[in-house]
Length: 86
Image (tube, rainbow, N blue to C red; front, side, top):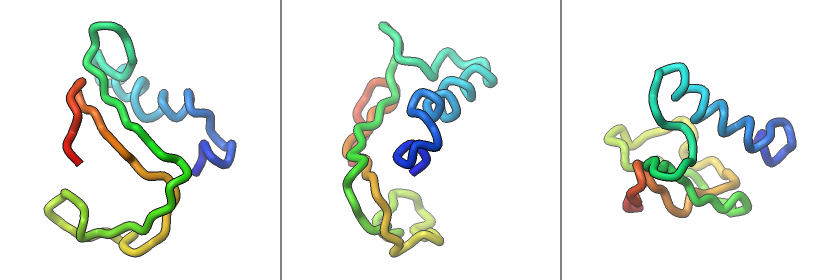
């Protein structure tokens, strides 16, 4: 929403969510570079969907956002260079 609405640039979002936390924690991650394992997300920013807490992989299975409509859906995810099954 912040990027979509022009309140935050995509590079700034990446810095806030990946590069800066990695730097603060002293981790050799948070960048896309040759030879480094990648954490990637393939996103359809236009896809509308409704949050379903029962479909979450976490054991709690609940969320205060259950049933709310949202825009933008993750299509595929890679962690450490390996695809995470959806």
